[in-house]
Length: 95
Image (cartoon, rainbow, N blue to C red; front, side, top):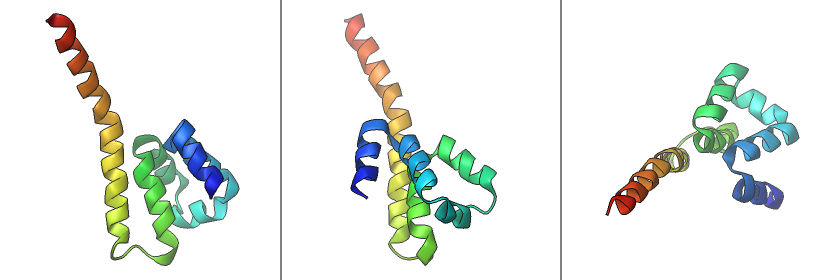
């Protein structure tokens, strides 16, 4: 588990998802019976997909939804954060 956290910190959620899929394909297969849905989730919202794969085997209920929502916020922050950073830099150069 420690190696997976290091991969997530260094390379991001997509690399972590790929490595986790290589190490435990059965878990991913039970979570996503249709592989195309898992692939789309891995490409579009990787943190949410990882949170869902983490919580799925025991059933998603209670605070598991909070973990999935946290993954969704992480996805929104990682994609939307670049837009605000570019805009802030543009304003700084215009002064």
